[in-house]
Length: 467
Image (cartoon, rainbow, N blue to C red; front, top):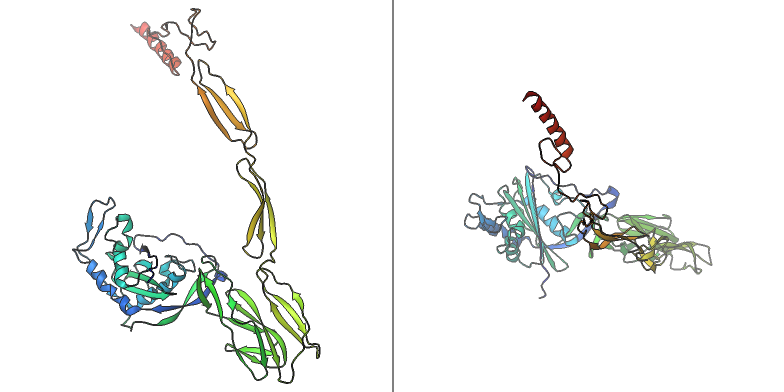
């Protein structure tokens, strides 16, 4: 059997000593409820409690310190109790991470917002790709990892936790596992484990997960007056997982032709109408034609009365050549009917120029008309070396101001060949023997020389007056 790549993540929230950082805030109109089908296997998942409590025994309860040189042993850990209320959260989170593998939920909120009851301390471990509870526990135990890699282990050894639960969901053949740990333990009584495929409703935000436009299994219906039609299946993908909308609304443009009742299209009269289906903040039009067995319309070729775009369907209106009845059918979205905003990006010295085309209706875009980077044009200024300063060659781009230097030349030595005690290069440097310049009989130089000389002058003046 092919083994799925296994991945682990851990997160801990200690309410008494840790403040959760701010998470992105998403507008409520960007959050929707979706339904995913997950096969739960909770009987074997619950068996993990025994393994966790065995890990919490004094001889097993250790982790590396931050230097990875000493084991830190915990000798007074209490065994955890299985929390059947917390299991509801663990099962929900196991389905959510099948869509968005993170401690952030698919709606952009913290994983701890999924808790049914309150908590004082909480922690979460998540993983996927492990077929059995023993194998995922071994991965969580992290026996051979360093301190940095033992976050799951330290979660299971948390001194503040009293309650424990596991969620195990299989989605598209991949096993997803969630451990939830918290304090306090709820009073929820024993519940029978769930071991069956289950429809799970969860919230998501289009700003968090990758959303693909929803599709319907059928868009055209031709019904007799005595016929009915079940509503078509509606699905979309979130991060490559197929889900269904938790809520669907449908409205007929002409209820004298057909209405939607309890998920069924029911004819009410002869003619054509459009049923608009709304889900996940989008609309799709269904074409419904109702006729009698002896009354079959002869439709013309139709006229597009609303052009489709890359993100919306259009409408084609048909007229019966015999009776003048009117019918509308949706025109599929045109993936090439973009409305582009064109921006020209001029080239610079280091970056290519290009023209960007961004569709104002969807996220599609592309770039073309590449213009190679212009390259630098450097002006060269040579500063020669002197007896006082190093020499250097400075290159400055006349277009963008980029600057660098090279070819440094060390300052050369002072020279007094004419014997006048001053540097021959005209820098004014005195090269003769320094004469005393202070009342104290010494020579002072440097930035504070004048202050020292002035102070000594006063001291020696008064010393002369008073002996």
